[in-house]
Length: 301
Ligand code: MG
Image (cartoon, rainbow, N blue to C red; front, side, top):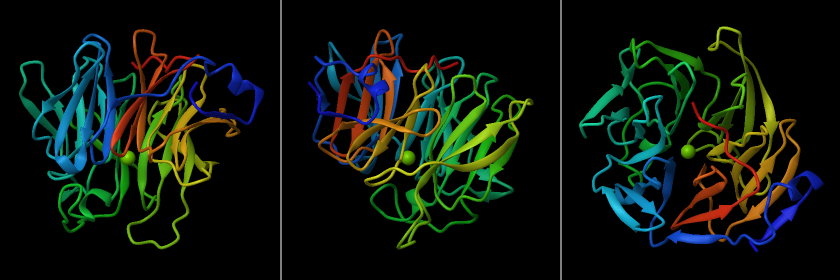
């Protein structure tokens, strides 16, 4: 079975004794942005330094979906099932339309260019929430060094009206994000400022107001050890599955570490997928791993 470490009896019910950690893709550089397409039975993910989007399916294996991805990073699907991607190079969010054309949803805030949108999630009202740290413009490896025009922030975009609201501005390095199953909570990863020799890396939790968009709170939910979190996802019981220095950590809604899935290479991001949303797809530097678990990812809107 996959190498797992249980820290709480609750974890034992979330994993399977007879499921292996499977390598479904390898030979990549730094992969991110996994998103499951149940209607096609496939996973899309990005190999950022190679500037491409890849596709995996059980029957077809790995193929190139987008040979030039504009250094895409985090991804999700909108309420119509269209692919939403964050791009480092063009510092934008795009939507892949059903006719194959690409629509830029946002590339500026207050007239200034965004930094390098990193990760994005959709909420049931159709709004897109995304993080905009400086990571993607800090090196040539993930899209090319560029100057920042504004501080890192977290945004809410209404793609219907184009309304853009800065919802969090006190994070130097906002990264992965996910809503709780009832959308009353927003988990936000903080991985620190570019160049900070000793960043305080943690996952924060915000309360979402009755209006469905205002945030309060924002205290530390959990500090990953070892390493830090990048991307995270939530299962239907509200547990948070986060990337960590040694694999994937499963956290209870109260922040307790329930258990760990050990992964041989550095995990950046993950998502649930498969016919029952019970398969964890894990982007880990040169490889993508898959692991069947005994829970289901929250049904995304
Ligand atoms: Mg990220």
